[in-house]
Image 1 (tube, one colour):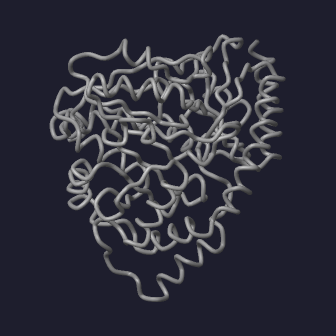
Image 2: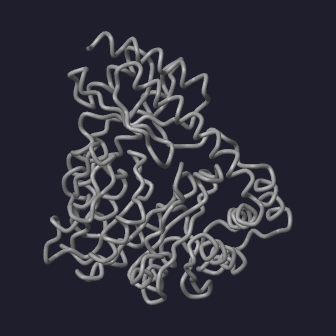
Image 3: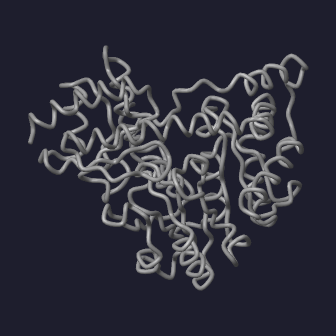
Length: 391
């Protein structure tokens, strides 16, 4: 029966997608004592109290029923106001925004709304592990666009253009990038925008780390001239507001595209959790001080951890966004998988192989620094011993 299920009853698409490389090491680490986990990208902060209380009050008030498929109008209006204030881009909250179950649902719905079998999606490599799966589940094909540490892993319009074929339909960007922490600057976004217009491509931009940018302000591709009408913008609350378990995000797009995505949302999801939407509204209205506090803490940890990695012999460029460091492990002579596995079992530090995020990630590992500084210090000490042993 096991053979029958594995080979005949399951779809080719599902069988073609490998399990997440992130969860593999997380699950092993969870079963071991004294592990310092730098594996899962989850804030170590608890959701701020006023946001939690808004969710609790929603339940206490009996707001436990479905909302509109689009989500509550109050939240959509707050999202529209926030995007206009941040980027100067205006979305109609009634027809161009809907509330999703996290950013993950938004990316999945975008792929399923856009793709026919064989359509190609260009994705920077390394890139978030779910992107390839979302494309495959929708019947499309992934075309990796390599990035390199020489450019601090910023994807270049020229590299995207070189990968375009007549079957190309969309470009899927994570900006800032998971796993590298790379940020696509305004100048490069404008070049990508001109390319998308010239080649009639849609851009799906995952901006869940948009508030976690260090230095220059985050630039949104929907604000690039000519791009609002061919951009699907997805963002959410998990990272900036420490709301991973609330599972709430949003998608913004021109009404005809959004309506197609909403069909999928209607049948698969119905609506995002009502109490989570109440909490998200509170986050947008009164959460800025908490975001600033958390981002300042991540920035301090970023500088400490990156300096520490460089000091122990793992060359690491300074990430400009998110909360990931992406050190080179070349001096150890180990593959990314070997490095992660040996480090976990020999020194009880969990990281994720860069190869889990694409071929261009081989030779690197992803380390999250959204954990307590004292744990980062312990991790650096253990990793230093490990590097000395294998150098």
